[in-house]
Image 1 (cartoon, rainbow, N blue to C red):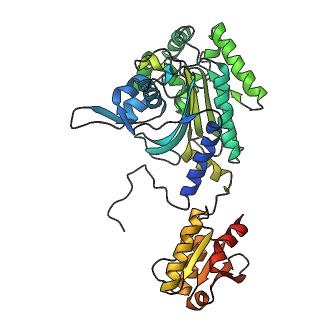
Image 2 (image 1 turned 135 degrees about the horizontal axis):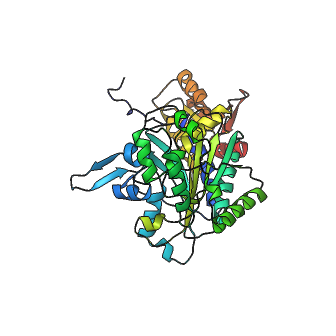
Image 3 (image 1 turned 90 degrees about the vertical axis):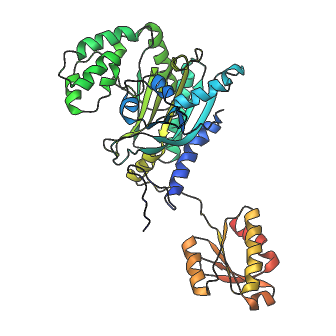
Length: 420
């Protein structure tokens, strides 16, 4: 046993399970690459003020969950708790919005960090794939991102997920709703922390998952009844575009997201097989975030999809992904000359795009064949001194058990033909 263990609330990705995570990330990325989104990667930590301003000082993420620290040089940094603020900061710093091709469409993949009470589906270190469309106010962009996420989930075979949709209004209509909501909430029996939220960001109270709070929210004013004409028209077009694309969704007038920067369109992807941690992804429009972090007005929209929870959703539905074999050919040399010859052939197979592995450590035939079985290889090449003297190797089909001699110089072409 090692002296050290992974920190509480984190996990290690280890083969063969790690292959599922890679497959999920690829499924999320594929429709984005096919729709004009370019890859971006940002640091794992940022100036703490970036998240305080962008995510919101009243959010649980900033007040309770952020890993913040001060460097030896006095800089105040935080491990990134989410991706949007970092991506927008990077886009502004690189002046991508000035290249004349708006929206700037970006996607990313990485690890994020929040100090939370660990439970199944909620970790202190978690993995997301995200997408952002920066610099355009267009209902078609909102619809595009929702459709692409739906496409990604369905490409994995998931069926039991739902899309929840709402509009949070904008700077014109939300203040009127905010005042009405505050009046309603002040009449409820709430704890001091929740009452403080009423003054800072009352919409966050709607997102409170505690049953004691939710029971009191019966009859709460709903934002949809306060939307201005522009927001109503915008939201209706988003709904129509999604519907025309054949993507089913549910209107959820109480849906808010846990970050302060959202405006207008907001959405969440939930899976009914995950219990309390049912959200597998979500996002929305954030038209004012650029200005919050010191940039120009850049209306934008995006989402983040949870890799960890999507893997759990696949398990809940009993879906086994069709993963490519890590090894197609396994080479078993018997003797020093065979080691040199087969190692050269394995290298050649790899150069030709065939996944090949080798029996290292000088094992005997029995031990090496056990390794070949464990590798999952479809074919095994075995060669000893007598085989090489005859200019052949033995090619064994691990499914049928059939074994045939093949010329040393023909083995690569033979395997290319058999493996297609």
